[in-house]
Image (cartoon, rainbow, N blue to C red; front, side, top):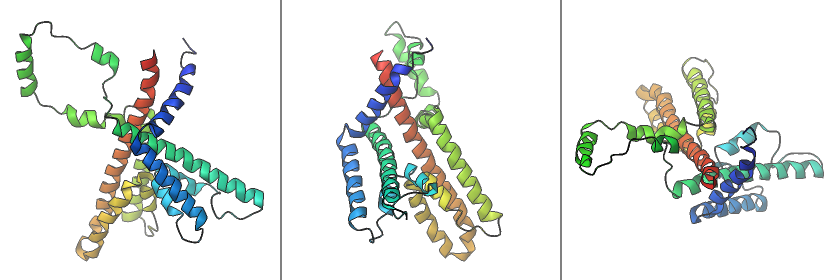
Length: 251
């Protein structure tokens, strides 16, 4: 039916909130984030603004292109609206991250759809199991990594995120090797692959200390941020799968 998907929107939102608050790890993450936001308002001159952004990365870094946030100058109404919008955006980012953390702690999501699993042939007699096990052990098993990475490419949300990561890495490589003035091109891969992308930048820093290997630094940084982006895409895909499973389970 054309309108069959409409009743699922609210259950999907309920599923997102349940994943974000339904286990101790997700609630602990939200508590740490709330404490960091409170510290920003209690100590406005303490330079703590970056902590909530790091805790809610990578989505929170999209706010850097928006003309509002703490420190916005204007009247009282303008400043209140700017800060309120910033807090609301952080809340959305925090719920998404907490839901991904909750989905991760509840176990992995299989990448094989239910209809595909149902269509697999069933071995009717126990005597066939030995031969099937022998054939399964003799055949190569490349599906382990493929199944693990499947959530990063089998839904539009994760694919869209990967497209942004690829674009940021391409711009960085162009600026690092072809542009005469690379500037701060490395900030975009950091923004799109945070928080793990920050670890990649730390690992790539020692390469710059050896002049003869300094040309490898962009490649090490690119490899680390690419792996970070792939892991983020897997988590985003698993979250999309878990939210999508609720309507099917109810049906």
